[in-house]
Length: 193
Image (tube, rainbow, N blue to C red; front, side, top):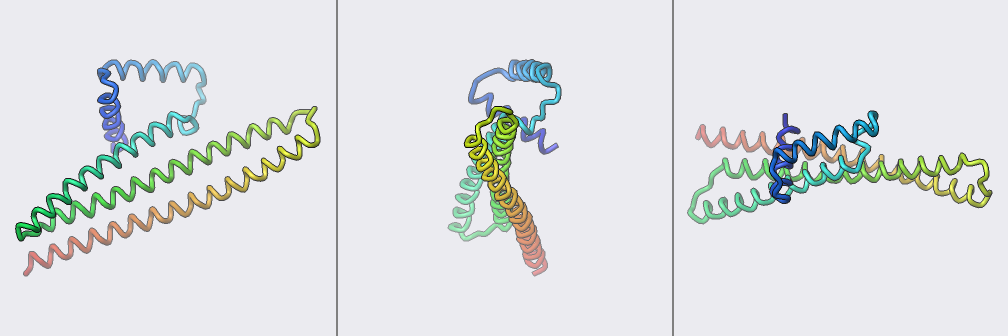
């Protein structure tokens, strides 16, 4: 459900940039998808650059949206404080937006890691094909083997980065939940007093 909302937001955003009617975009999308499926029925959307471009466009749009909301909210909170008031619900929303912005940032990092991983996989496959050629010169073979080892090392580093990023993301989510719980407890105490 959340993915569908994100897709709709992105479509509206892209449409506003291109000024193309939505009906025309849907027809073009269906035609393009049909053509892609006719070319390669086993096409994996996660292996295409379109997937990364789409996701990155969505992440950037969400990042800008959250930043705009944060700016407006911070201005509202400052005005409220200048008037001598303090609305805990505004702070609650601010913490939620900051948490959401952190999640979006980590999603962007994960996308970049996945894209780099995919690029390395392509290079790896190309070198393997080159190494299978029967008329390969020994010097060329040695260079290709060295490059293959370098790619494997880079891929291992990327996997470690990916694991680290996933752990950081989990920690961020836990911190966000703890902050939310603390705010709720504070609000309950204020209501009791």
